[in-house]
Length: 524
Image (tube, rainbow, N blue to C red; front, top):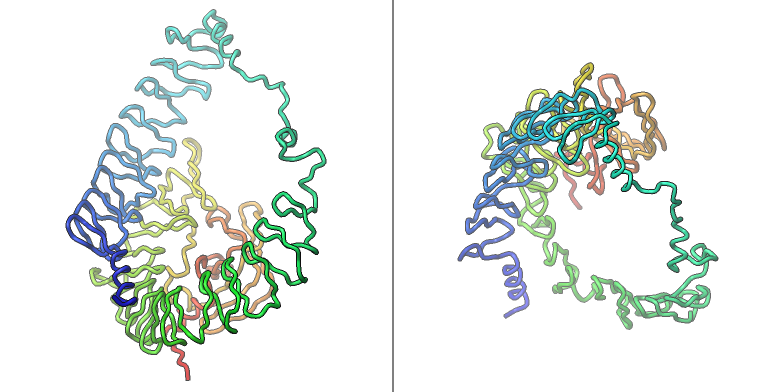
């Protein structure tokens, strides 16, 4: 068998698995209890395939429209624990952020107590349970023998107080210093050697002007250019020497380069991820070669076609102008099953298939929810605004009593690739790295560094530093120091963050490619 045929068989074996008595391609299908379904790397709920980012599984039943990453199960039905609660096997809407279960009855933890499946009004903050009644722990006690409430001057209460005092820690005993413990255990000596400038090779001290330490082995330097390759020394001035991932090779042809830990001469072979191809001078696509004039390479997989008509989406290719697919953060989705293609959009890697869906995004997760009145996003959570408020991306339970805070939807900062051409290209936007953030009253001021203004076809360097604000501190998610964001002007002509560019190696190229999608470059 030829090497290429053997490689094909090996790759086929790796991508094929048994499902019952049948083989299937794990890169195209998912097997659930002997049932093969279209779609790779999905999850199983009994014999049903589902996506954990879009649905939940409870007792082998799928709840569509609520991600398993934020849901709880109530018997066979999933629910959102932010806004709902499961009591006695039934799902109910919460009346406050502090709603809890007392057997099958709902109550508010701030205003009531649940004592042995019975709800009592919490008369003061010092009221607690004693059996099936309540008492004021500042004035009374609960006798543990008979669960009767008595005044604190009673014999029962005095005895109970004595028992509790025996278990209290002695706060007057001084704590042992961390440094003292380190010295006692020999981690730091009394001369504080952790601040010494002495270099060690293993346990042996050495002078870096005279010796070099190669993987714990001390070697005398031959010259000022003695280097280590793993445990072996070599001279930079030596001809034909190559160090590839800690492996030293000698007598290599001039112009050789490393592929992993193996050297080779690009004048003799084409090496694609350690796989040898002849002749030399070919282009690589993954482990194989391809012709860039007749093929397109997408994440290591080559396809026949021209970049004039085709584009990559992850490891797949699609016709952008046909409008039958949409690419969401490297995940390709078909649109042919939708009644209205124009309503389709992206929510990170997920597909927004209608205007009845809401995308909620945070640095940790991106999820799709069914739109509900009076609800808003706080990071990737979708919350009831009558139960919670959101400040800088953090959920805060609303007080049970007092005036209701103004219900205002939080601002969203979504991945740049979620936005359409019209949202980015029809007005000037800024790209800036967050260098500093200050909050004054409820206003947030942000200092941006390396600021660029992007105007569809032009990129202008504004200045080294620019302060923008004030932003409403609670309405906007927290901004990460050192991270770059896309900024756009609001109706008050003030810049505010619109999109995150994390995960994009060249955000400028991404923006210009989006805004100039009809222009093509050709080599002469």
